[in-house]
Amino acid sequence: MDEVQTLIRYFLTGEESLLAQVVADDHHDHVSGQVGPDIYRTVRGWLTASFGDLAIDLRAVGVDGELVLAWWVVRGRHTGNAFPQLAHGRVPEGRPVSWPAVHVFRLADGRFVEHWAVRDDLGLLRQLGAAGDQA
Image (cartoon, rainbow, N blue to C red; front, side):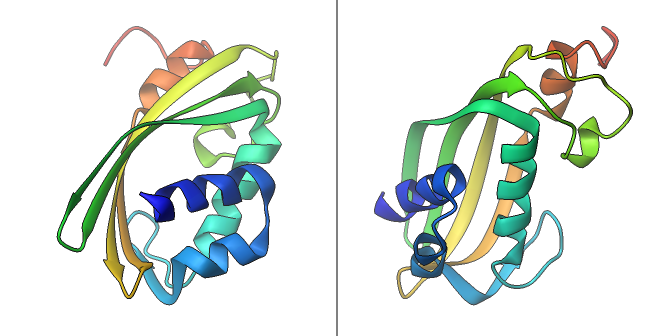
């Protein structure tokens, strides 16, 4: 699906025109509660400040009417702690990480107007040695 690939390209490049193409001004992010496209700018900032050699591998996309499900994996090396879940004094050691997530978007007029996500944050923390073996 072109909209998902465009959003991933935005995360990797920061090209604002890409974000404007796929995210509506009244977009509602149900993960953060924020309205508008700024949450994607924030997340991009967290990604680029936290992971070197950043890559996002799109594994699958499903569409059901106006709902789009995207499964992707973020890969990189831990080089910073901008993500809130990393901001607990963990020293970046350049460890490689692979962090899967499933995102659900609602489309209207070819742009994302709502977003939900399920991410494996605990798995990311475990890769960095920041979480014990308890689930």
